[in-house]
Length: 470
Image 1 (cartoon, helix red, strand yellow):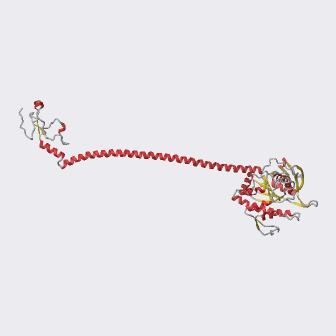
Image 2 (cartoon, helix red, strand yellow; image 1 turned 120 degrees about the horizontal axis):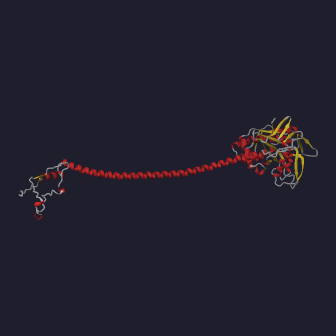
Image 3 (cartoon, one colour; image 1 turned 135 degrees about the vertical axis):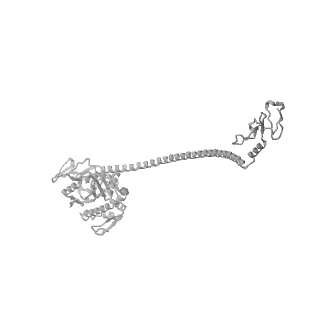
């Protein structure tokens, strides 16, 4: 094979078969090993760039080095279009990398953000859960407090109504009714049913009863000797109809003649004697036995109708009760001491005791005048205490407590609660009833005696304690 002419622009590629390895020429930069893919670079988008051609007749290939160089230069450093293209490709690649990077960062950031938001959401849920738990705990405490106070209110109301019921039951207890009515009255069942003047009457067990006693000692005595315990100068039987809510007061003259029990200094029963009813208090210890003996005398006087409670007070303590209600206004019907007939005055302090206690012993019937003063005082006192109790239910308890050391009483707290609440909210009237009678002077007895008229008195009792049924 003839050797081609050597020039700079052409290269003859010999076949491997025609070249001995030992005869291989030294490697020259102008020779391209076309079998190496890494030495050939084609412009993107060109299938056949036309830079290397077949020399024909098996003589090899001819390379257009100028075109190759130009292409190389243009591809890497040359024409703006190609540079732009290359830059564009570079930018695109960079952009892709950047975008990828951004995307990766964004993903990372998004992931972090998602994580962060997830964490925030989780924290928020935890906080909500914690807040709910806290609120749930507070709610339980609040409910517990409400239940506690509700229990107290219910307990208080229950206690209140139980006390009212108990007080009412005690004041209207007639389980052992066994009356001793006059011989000329027809009755049965121990006095539950009475027949009088063609009519039938049934005992009204809705009547609450308690006895008020005003004792003439300036101070109630303890362990008094016989005859020194004092006398009941004021006797008023309070009757309160728990159905009609009306109070009627039977005014009992201290000089009324009736049977009383007498006892010796040791407290032993002596006998029963008809004498002034006020003296029953003197046969006792000045406290409970005296009050009980006075109550028994009043029960006998009203045909053995039970008196369910009593309240005894020494008259010097009247001023305490009087001033507790702010004083009591009166209009005297007689002139005596510092009082003038028909001139209104508000009683304060010792004036109250003087008004209800004064009696001229030179006059046989002066107790009747004194009773008129006492009745007026009771009416006016009631007119003060009822609105005061409406304003403050503790008023009766306050009066009771302030006067306690001056009193002896069988009224218990349940009775006071019942009477106080009824007086405050249901009170429907107040009436004072006199007992008709005559005074009789006994020469051998320095004291006066008062005898009630039996028929009018029985009719008064029938009117207070009975209901006509036919």
